[in-house]
Amino acid sequence: MTIQRVEVITGLERRRQFSDEEKLRLVEEAFQPGVKATEVARRLGVDVSLLYRWRRQFFGPQPRLPAFMPITVAAEEPPPSDDAPEPAPAAAPPPGVVEIEFTTARLRFTGAVDPVVITTVIAALSGRSA
Image (cartoon, rainbow, N blue to C red; front, side, top):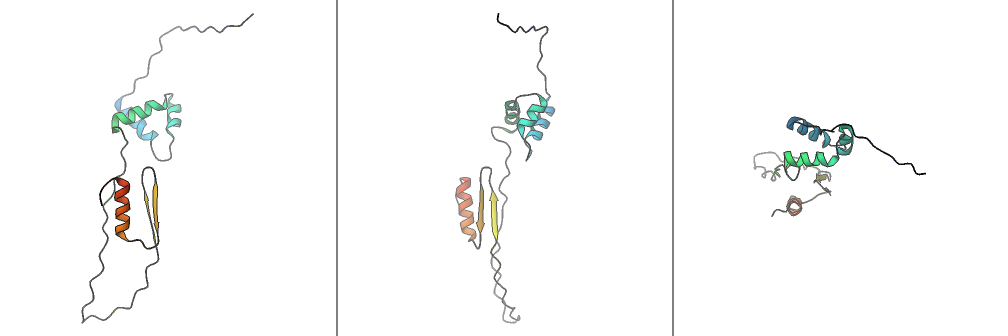
């Protein structure tokens, strides 16, 4: 004798409706740094793909990404005039680290790097001309 499972459905299951404000709040919560969208979806009882669909609905095909900020490399100071006393020679600055984080990668320069090299590499990675 085989045992069969029978499921009785007694009513209509209705889909939950989310307002645009709720959707936006949930998307912003789910895609905060360090938050896992799957955990937020599980807590809400929705599929994670719904959160991604809502994100596309509000922010387009890609989420808002941080834009590059303009930077300026200061030119060398003008030579001192003949009247001014000669300053003591400054020690060479210690080699530094320049770290740039992209959406999918991190770029790190260590030591003394020519600003033109950094500009060219960033332009190449971002698809722009230098």
